[in-house]
Image (cartoon, rainbow, N blue to C red; front, side, top):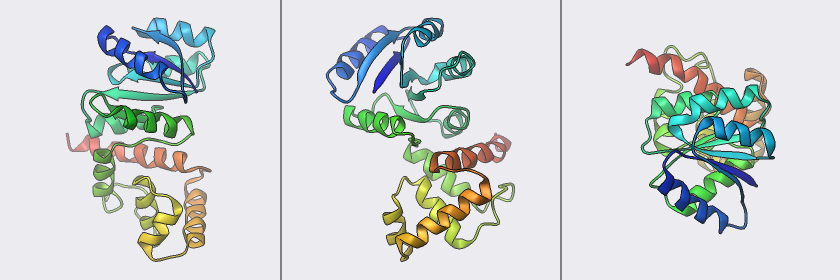
Amino acid sequence: MRLLLLHPHVLFRASLARFLTSERCVELAAECSDVPEALARLAETKVDLVLLDFSLWQSLVPAARVSGYTGRFLAIADEIDPRACIRALSQGVSGVVLGSDSPEHLIQAIQVVGGGAIWIDQSVIQLLVARYPWHEDFCMDNLSEREQAVLEGILGGLTNRKIADRMGASEATVKATLQHLFQKTGVRTRSQLVRIILAESLVPIQQVR
């Protein structure tokens, strides 16, 4: 997996770059200190995933999409603000990790995001579960108990088998319920389903500011 590393702090970026170059599962294609430099490198080299400082996602992601970049974004944050994290995840970022996380945790997040899924921090999951599906403004609050249970499992990053075990149901039942959720929401993948939930969560979350 080819990565572009974007971070304004030289010491942090250099340290992280040394770690990434030692990992067999990734190839560090470029290191950048600012958004214009990152956009220029994205235009000239193939990159599968951009690993960037969270403070820069709003400047980079829309501009990168306009320029034709179709890869993934994984942001590194100093701390997790669930509201800001949800906004980023609903607008093109595929995951957020803490700068204080372990190297193993970071590699796991890179592999998950690079594989096409969304990486959600536990604090964000807890916020979503707390607000879903009972919030009166949530547009998907008419789901059945089984659909709610499957959706909660997806938000928790569980496999179909683990969701089935938690529900006391078969894996086939979970798969069928997941297909019903896809049909109701008009999506085809788990990642798309999570993005819809994140996007719908923005309205009630902004109202409590």
